[in-house]
Image 1: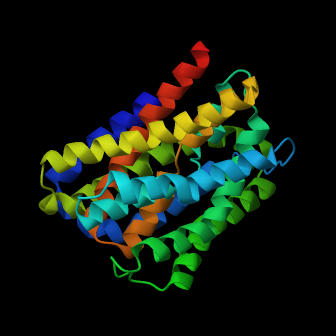
Image 2: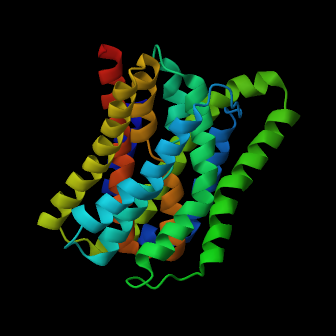
Amino acid sequence: MVLTFSLTIILAFIIGLALPQAGSYSVYIPHMIGIMLFFNFLDVKIELRQSHAWVLLVTLFLSAAAIPGLVYYVLSVGLPPPYRTGLLLVACSPTGITTLILGRYIKGSSYQLVLSNFFFITFCSIFYIPALLEVVLADVVQLETEPYHLLGQMALLVLLPYILSQTVVHLLHQHWLIRHKNISKIATLLLLFGVVVTSIGKVADQLVWSADSIWLAALILAIYLIHGGIGYAVGWLRGNAELKKTLPFICSSRNIQLVFAIAVLNFSPLTYLPIIMGLFFHHLTNAFWLWILDRN
């Protein structure tokens, strides 16, 4: 599945460059992302048992303060402002939906922690992402919306797909819910393809391939590896094998689709490029941590 996602993004990237007119449909990116979240929310349930409250606070601190601060104020200094904004959005994105799917296959991990962390960080992001953007970017970038509008955007992007998905789960028969997993995979791939094609088409005539592009890719990879590495270190310091199996995956996997929608609604098209790179590295680093955890 990881290989399929990566190939989908590469193909969409190439088509977006070849068909820049696809960028005229970028206004529909938030809608496509909302539908993607809807399909992926069909398979989740809120369970707060064995939630390790201190772990939730650690992962919140990393996503809302430590990693965004490191990326924006240290690693990305010197890059053009749109790239720095995109990197900030990647750094502050909440835990990815992929954890809910692949987390089941990590032997010795705590799936209850995966679930509770996903919902805790996702719903906290409704508040911390608007606050972070306002504090960090207030004197640098003119936001197209007020902070409370950003709050509303986040709430709609997270809560509406979740409410609709849970309504469908309660209304439809169980046999459909079994089949929905395949439907969800196909729909996610198609929507992801559409998101990347339209995004690349939107920025195709503004892309400049330079040393900045290589450095940008290196920074995106660093965000994932640093985040996951800190998670592994915390689990190791606690001496808890279950946490060492769970935290790296939780920390490394990011919900890039969510911050992509925020970028489309509020920032210039060049901001999309780091986020699109993040979509690609997201799946590569998921595969990396699965391999590391499986070996251990």
